[in-house]
Amino acid sequence: MSRFVFPPKAVPAIPVQGRIELFPVHRIYCVGRNFADHAREMGAPVERGSPVFFTKPADAVLPSGGSQPYPSATSELHYEVELVVALGRDAAGVIAREDAPRHVFGHAVGLDLTRRDLQAAAKAKGLPWDVAKAFDRSAPISAIVPVEEAWPAADALLWLEVNGERRQQARLSDMIFSVADILHELSLRFELRAGDLVFMGTPAGVGALQHGDRWLAGLDGLAAFSGRIA
Image 1 (spheres, rainbow, N blue to C red):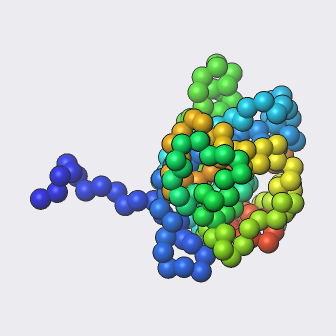
Image 2 (image 1 turned 90 degrees about the horizontal axis):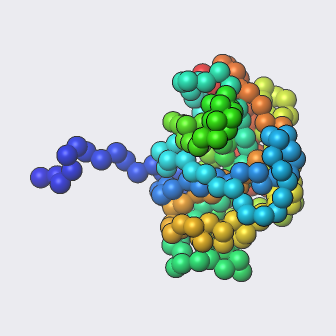
C-alpha cells in the first residue's frame, strides 16, 4: 500500500544530448541583471555588488521547447534567452570559485519567460514578483550538453530570433558574474544539489511574444532549440 495520499507526480526531467538517460530537475535558480545592457534597459543600476537571484519551480521546465499555450493572467509575455548550467553533484557546503567546474554536469540554452505586466505591477508596489516568473512552462530549455561533449567558449554568442528576426544577442564574456561567481554566491545562500539548474541571465533586447510567434534560441558551438506560442 502506498504511503502517499495520492500518487506523486513524475520528477521533471530534461533530455541529455547523446544519452538515453534523462536529467532529473531538483531546483531552478535564476540570475537577474547579469548583463549590463539588459539592466540598463530595465531601468536598474549597473553594479558589480551582489548578484540578484530568484527561483522557478522545477516543473516549470518545458523540455526541448515545442508548442506552448499563451499563459494566463498576462498580456505581456516576454522572452529572455539565457545560458543554463546544470549541476551534476551535490555541494558540500560553500563552493569555492576554483571548484565550481567540478559541479557542472552540462549546459543548455533556455528561456526565462516573464509576465512583464505582472512584474511591473509588483515592482511598483514594492512586492515580490514570483507570480511574474514562476508560472507553468515558464522555462523552455534545450537538451543538456554534457561537459564531456562540449564546454561553451568564454565568448560564445548567445542569441534569440522571433519569426526569423534576431532580437537578442550577446557574448558570454559580457556577463557581469561568471558561472564560477554565481555558483559560489548561490552556495552561500542555498544547499546546492545535483539536478539544480541555473539560468545565468539575459542580454538586452527583451520583448513581447504574441499568439502564433515562433522563436529559435541558441548558443553558438553548443545548442539551439525552437518553439512557438500556440
